[in-house]
Image (cartoon, rainbow, N blue to C red):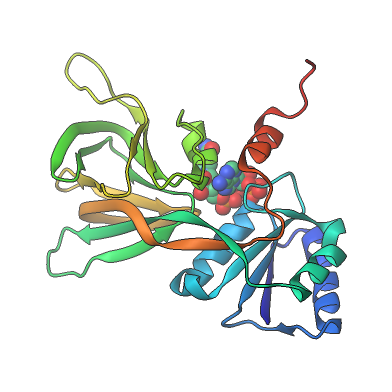
Length: 268
Ligand code: NAP
């Protein structure tokens, strides 16, 4: 079993990483930098997002485990005081996993001679304009749904629905669903310009295509990453054929996480 530990730079995370390294080595696990079977992240959801992007080219060969050292995370199931339990569990590992859908982003540059670029997102991708209003046509497959004007468009996975998507008024979706959700970022709606003005959910057979007006400089974000402004012809967003796999032993009920993260104890 080849294990990589990836932690953020918070003092607690560095300390937990050091302790875990020692415990895994004593148990005879091989700690590696490249080609791990399991990646253990120590930090928050942000740390897991960055670990995911490092392994995005080999998702079939890797499982993720998140240990959180801050507040409760959505991708982080273990706490720092459960290290012994975790190491024991990995020692008995049978290769079980739970997997979640990902977003495939294909970007076509205005210059048709350029190859398209592919990205995978765990949470979401957004399309925004650098300074001016974003003006673009939004297609569902071949059907032009609307001409969008506003700050931008966000397309999220089910597990990403609790991130930026939720702040934009999107619904929280069960990760058992194989769907994508599109939300608007500050659309302009008046007597002249009109958008759907509601989140929409597409099936795994459908693709959202965003075609920005010519000459606009577009910013694309994929999870925590932002890509430089370029002139873009089209961005296609669909459910990816790849999925992210989490180590199975401890994976709390999704709605329990939602409740813990957003509602907490009420005074009922
Ligand atoms: P960040 O700006 O440092 O952190 C954004 C916050 O979002 C952190 O508290 C992070 O949790 C949390 N988060 C990440 N994924 C989540 C998920 N699936 N469900 C619920 N909360 C989630 O950026 P970052 O840590 O690199 O994370 C990038 C993500 O931040 C983006 O993918 C986007 O979803 C989110 N974001 C949200 C907004 C917004 O709500 N207005 C704006 C921009 C980006 P941890 O503290 O556990 O890391």
